[in-house]
Length: 350
Image 1 (cartoon, rainbow, N blue to C red):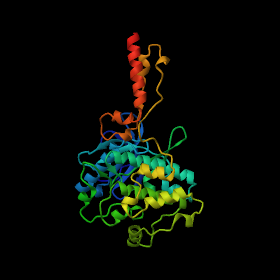
Image 2: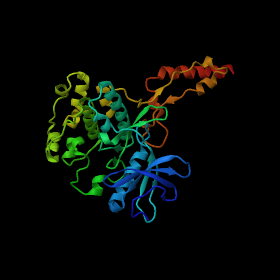
Image 3: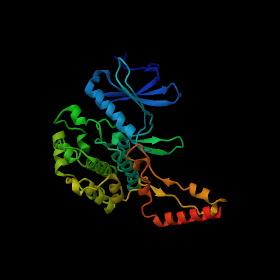
Image 4: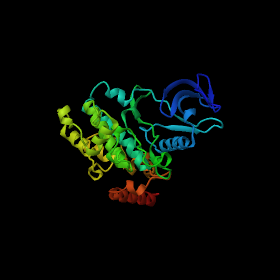
């Protein structure tokens, strides 16, 4: 069925009409397409026919499941997954238009405030993944897009979960065989470069590399060969930030140094912790109570209490069930007692 490239006008799986090619990678090709049922434009990533083997199909499915598991505005949305008879599988995602972080860095070092803003969005996205049991393991500038929104704004998106580890699913090393190094050498954590297990701390290391690159305009680890680069990574050998850009604030330099620690135990405990350490603004990751309305603001009193809503992010939810409300009320016992007292008074007066 799909032993060739797709072309404009081709209909995939009876649901998507191809508009144009967007790009091509090692295993897949990406196209823009119209979703026939809704008439909107989406992006479709298709496993190349030349790579249509069972091991690659398994990795492709894991990529779709990893991205679909995370609920966060800075993670690319997955709409559909298809496995048509006689053809390779495909993933349907939101269509993102805008430059990659790599293209932005190519223009030169970013102002510190700009870099910290982007770091905050990346940390929030990666943190959301970790809370869902997803470790990206391939964070790099080309896997981050600064998407344009309809109101002319910008929304950072993390994408390409092709080698992510997902709790409950076979790991990529199981699919590729022992001794396989996963990731991109310039952005690998030392434990990855050694062929060890890459966990959440490995993503923190990669985020540290991205912050370094944003404020200096260059990678911390880059040598003439892959092996030489990996030697630098494993031994933590890089030019200190202050020697390249003396104006970077000490707090940012300290955060980078901490994230790039060879010793996992010395790195920030999470992406959220790294953002805090660097002084980076980050999307709210934990629930908070909105302002509690006074019962007297409502004609009946009781209805006002029904309007109280805990504001939480999907990123705080580890499963498909309701969030742990008790966690969101920690430290609010006095307010809860007051609400209970007001409820009792309202009922007594009715």
